[in-house]
Length: 455
Ligand SMILES: O=CCCCC(=O)O
Image 1 (tube, protein in one colour):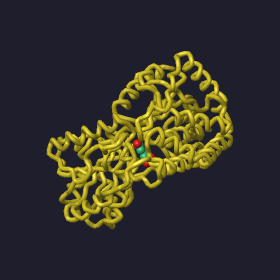
Image 2 (cartoon, rainbow, N blue to C red):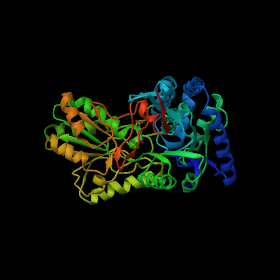
Image 3 (cartoon, protein in one colour):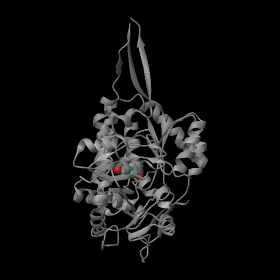
Image 4 (cartoon, rainbow, N blue to C red):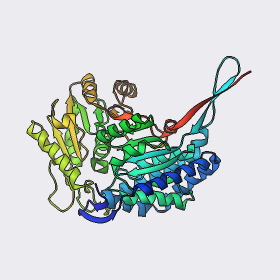
């Protein structure tokens, strides 16, 4: 894949970047390794100041950064601005709480004293996706920078200007060279990078295939890794739910970011007795929406990230329809320049169909009726993924009981799933392992060193 900005609104190539040579890569690793030697022993208050400054710069450049996101991957401009806000709040969260999270943890032991100290480990390689080009990077970078690690970023090849901008923001905030380094390189060079003893941890958000090959390289070299992969999250609406609320959140949860999120509410599962009413309201909320330029605040349907992404979802929808599913609304590309796909709802889905078993990474909701709560849970769990989910019910205890039976890393009740700096984020099954954000996110790439003092 060439490293380039292609505007998904009109498919025009805006700017192309060269991959770095092996010599440049070596020199960047050497610089990062050197930076780590002083960063790991720096005062945590200075590390915190750096992150506060990064957050401040991001807020002050919110519009410019949001426009870059929209240019490179087509997100609606208001959603791009929200991403920058969220991203700044992640940097602030670790700037404020990092010191407390990293405090020594005393251990009760017989005779003598003991505690666990969280120490940094070195360079962490972040392999990040295009769908939240600033926020995905923040989630790995903020906890590691405060912990005393340094970060090298291999971003998705279609968001090179976002990647470069993050490095520039760190520089502007006063970070020495090597604290945060953007690398323009192809995915196939990651396996070789994993062999480098100066790279001490690897984190990837992306597809199952990319995750599996990164984990293989990390495992072969005995490196700790974190994986945030795909999802096919269930959005369960029980018969005692507030239907208006559930519909509103389903629209947001499924069609936000043009459906291109690992945690999108890809499978809407509604109890039979209220399913028709829900479906009618759900459909009406996505009917006659304004299609157009994602930079225009009036636009409600913007482009998908690329022609390739559009073709993938178009094929998945066509295959599923051939297999017997029905289209309630949408179902095809929009006849205009750019990677536009109609907001779509599929019904009559059965096990084995394409949309039943695969992740649909675009604006397509799979709608299911379940005869009762147990059937809804069984359906929710009938997937190889285990990222997130949502349950809607006015009875909180009932909803918690349902959440408890869902095989996922996260469940939100009466809300659609969205990350927050203070909540752990991550999955189980084929959605990956490890956690980002919250106090748990800082624990992934630190040496939990035992120190024992004899009596
Ligand atoms: O693809 C991953 C999406 C994460 C969305 C979020 O941060 O809520």
